[in-house]
Length: 211
Image 1 (cartoon, rainbow, N blue to C red):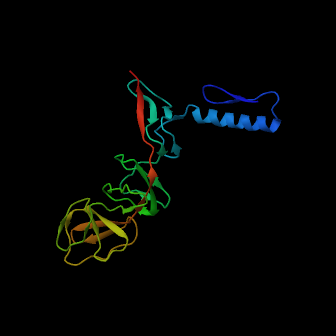
Image 2: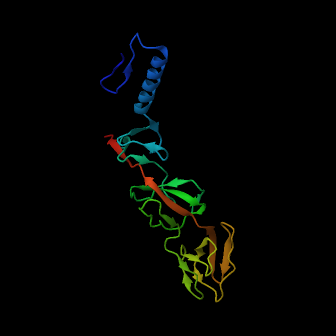
Image 3: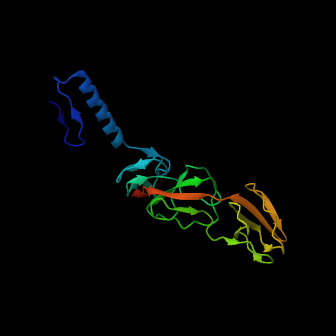
């Protein structure tokens, strides 16, 4: 009868074991060894499911740097949200300020200028247009302001040249990255991304400061 090693639980086959059973035991052993093998990366993980306490080592550490990263929370790793970035359905992100959750793009488009208020309730969604207002005639706009048309078209528009808007609403483009002239103001339009809360995010933090 097979026994188990005391440290990592490897199966120790016996001479009497059947060949098929021995092969399965060896397969399980290799899987366990793979799970605990050292991992080397250039950056903290940004994809995949990670168990708590899992460590990832830097490929090229240096004095004053850290040895690597350790995961403080079991969950999914994902890239950090970035502003005015193109996202496709199925892309995953985590907020710049950790809130314990990760999010999936359920409507493709571009992220907004400002970090959205990400929901923490399971399955809730948010449109990535934090800080928006509806376009107003004869109003002074600053670079980076976001507006929606009076009749929404699933797009937002970012002020790239500050100034006074016109007395009549402009004809809004529906082409991503195309500009719209509005008296003194210039707007650039993008399709709105929608994010959906998907679950618990992994949380990697640096460890092992090298003196």
